[in-house]
Image 1 (cartoon, rainbow, N blue to C red):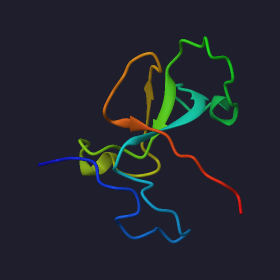
Image 2: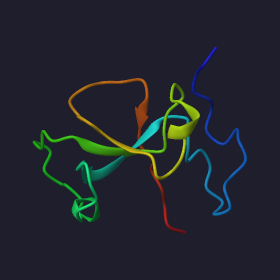
Image 3: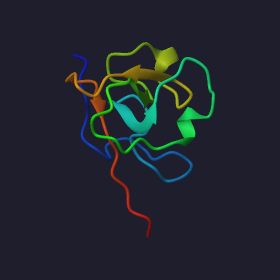
Length: 92
């Protein structure tokens, strides 16, 4: 069946990053707007923000056309889901 997979199981992309597409949508820190208007460049630090936040990359249940970095959608942080996640990274 369709499911998520363990981190690092697939090959890395050309930047050496693993699992950037298709496992779970990845939350960004930006408010979703229908068109690019500069909002995506601003990190939202207000924990009481109720606006839709941008998710990218597609998830395990998405169609192939949604499994790409340019794929973006708006999800509300107050709703739980098995298709959303986040990426922690460290600059070394």
